[in-house]
Image (cartoon, rainbow over the protein chains, first blue to last red):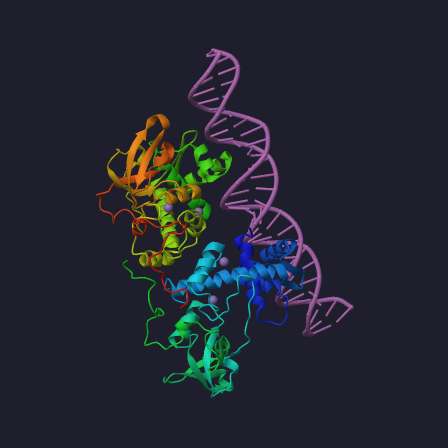
Length: 254
Length: 254
DNA sequence: ATTCTTATTTTGATCCATCAAAATACAGTG
DNA sequence: CACTGTATTTTGATGGATCAAAATAAGAAT
Ligand SMILES: [Mn+2]
Ligand SMILES: [Mn+2]
Ligand SMILES: [Mn+2]
Ligand SMILES: [Mn+2]
């Protein structure tokens, strides 16, 4: 019974609150993230506060209550399972699935979600390496370091990409930096605000620090199955911008 | 940019207009079909008329314009492709997919729809045997006779079931009368307002005329591929209420 | 032709989500 | 401390979708 607007605000709030110290988000931030004028966010947040979903500190900011966070996590679960489904079953590119899931996340029922989850084999992470909350609303966000502050020389596996922007994701994929890829930071050039990353045998790629900060890694020795989807794990030939599918669910002509 | 309410009204209108002589539907009928009070339907229909999607005869009824019908057919296409997808890929029961598709039909993009269509092999009919409009909004509704006015003795194939009610569909399926099944009308008992239908070796099933009228058939000699989905074509063992899937898209644990 | 009955339309409200623009609080800065 | 710039909240309005209840049109019945 929560409207899809409510679901959107809660999910966004959850996302914006991740990765900042303060548990209160300034309303201006929320408004910009939601693409509405500030007054709209204020009105909405008041309504959410009345519904017991957020805690609202006028002039201070907004945070999630326990109930609000639960709801948010269920929406996040739907969003991420749908994303993975779109990539893995329908073969969409990972750069577009966030946008597609924005609507679908409000339309998939519990029943359909359960089937999707089963079909995908109860996955733990979405195509971007983001963890998928359980059906009871639990999530563990592993805290990882990014390519921006990762020690040079050691072999790392890309685990997670924090930006859903299509252009950025396409770029990341073209450079072979999708989750599962094994890379090594060659060196940091603080003066240039950049890092050099080597992936496979190619010449190193230069990444600005702000871009590098959005690509999270883990030691290449860490267990793989818990973290990144298999699909991303091997390097591709590949200037195709569609991720390769191992097998189609069934032949195109059946 | 049509809102999902507009899409719902147009699809419903299309559905209600099928199978009646008059091309104008009384607003009361539309209101009841939409589950709103009559005044709401009047207001909405006026808005649709202003948008050039329907033709409104005050006190006479409402019909679709060419543009309105085009839009309706695209919604119907989404609805039916989604239904088939839910049955065939996610393994949902055909008795629930209409309700599920009610929301999803507004959330699937052109892109996703195209993938679904391809994955299903450009199907011609949905799980209920209803024809799926093409992506350019064309549909051919074969006019068929029902079990209610079907000559006794001849072998018939079930092609289409006109009622989306879950209880009715479950019943139909339990009796082995799903699309694809081969049946014979044993006799009509006009006094009892009923027909007896034999399916396979079992004892004949009695169907009231109003129920029988909702089950459309075609001569068992007619080409099968154009009409009914393969899945329904063979009899099942089967007290499972989930339709069997030939193969899962991929193993549950992959 | 008058009256009754029923379908339809009108009218007046409400709820949700949004915007534009005016008002206000706050955090510095001079 | 008064001043100014920015973030936030208020206020007033709008569009979409709905309902309840009153008004009205048409058809059927007397
Ligand atoms: Mn959304
Ligand atoms: Mn994601
Ligand atoms: Mn719908
Ligand atoms: Mn159907």
